[in-house]
Image: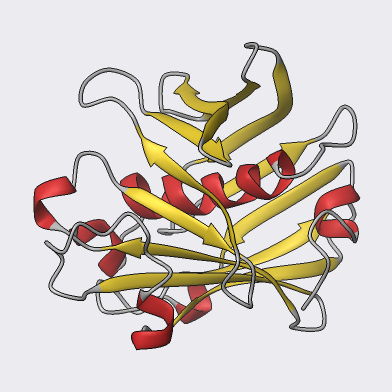
Amino acid sequence: MAQVGAGPVYGAPSVSIVQDKRFFVGMLGKATYAITDGEGNPIGAVAQVDPDESKHVRTFGDDGGGAGLSQHFELVDAGGTPYFHVARALRLQSAAKPRFDVTLPNGAPLGHVESEKLVGRITMGLYAHNARIGQLKLAGLRNNVLNFTDAGGRQVIECQRKPPMFSREDAYIITRPFPTREPMGTLILAAIIAVDNAFFSQTQASLF
């Protein structure tokens, strides 16, 4: 298990998270992302992993309406060692307000990311230890600016989304003016996975 908060995924001043279209096969495909630093060096990846009973128990927000259906992602370092797991219960009735639970590879909970608005700009709350510690709110004409703020409303990082032009991949460019403390650093990375798969993905994630 990789140490959350450590390594270039967390410490590089500039990080790009880009959907890897080589693995994109339509709505039945799995979301896969390459993570690189500002020089283009690979420093990690995000992969959608197959659900099973051991993983579904990580969907703490499941109200039972998903009939046991869930979706799972892992963020790993350059060597393939996982940092954390992101799980989402798939429920048609909660499509407008999806929730993504974040856990360590051993199943220990870290927090969750949850959509908070039914209308207006996409807004997601970042929660840890039953407290709302931050917010992600999209801005810009094409929802291409991701504003991450802490509980006091102060900007934590800068992040831009580059919507797809001639392909169906999204790219998220993170700029860190200063190191981000835990668990905020992990929840920011999880929130990028969450917002892309809840609102912009063309894979099976976008069906719920």
